Length: 298
Image (cartoon, rainbow, N blue to C red):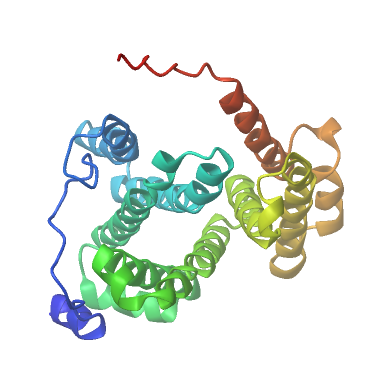
């Protein structure tokens, strides 16, 4: 049923389909050590949760604990997906850029697993799950984000890139509002325990600020360094807005605490520190020893 719906909404593009390749293979179908290692790391959180579930280590509500943990990794991997392009371009490393589809499809898989675990938490009463999604705002937001990821995942193939042409980039730019919905869902779920939600919002702010830079500035050190305080302020502002609009807590005092490191490094500051890590990584990448090409024999 769902397959028929998706095929109607997103018909298969014309032309000869590209041969299937496994996630650990490159475009030519050969084993890629880099892709295999990245794929293993991406699967590790789900494997860890599955192992904890098998050993009975998820507490008295295992479905709820697994649901929360996989949800956390869904937003983390989605943000990593959006970070692939800037990191790959800043480091001038095409092998990193080639990992975008792998990250994106893994983010979709985690989000789908998150929904499946929610259904399990509700004893797979699918009508009740659908009713809850319609009636509860935070669930509806999460479901819209998931449907957006499904659309992007469905159109991520080479055939769709050719079929849509310039429209493909416009369609896949929706990854940013989808990520914003995911972060909003994270805030709604976190309530007053916002540490990682604020950090996620700060990282998304960095990604948007980097995209907003003129093309010529995106790889320049002064611009990358300037993004660090801008990211910290953006994260602090988002946290202030949340407390001011959604809670009765003193948003002004929380903002002041965010900007005062005497209280310890708050998540907004950590977002700025993470932003500083980008130019630091670029420097280390440039200083790495280069392999010399083998001499050409006559």
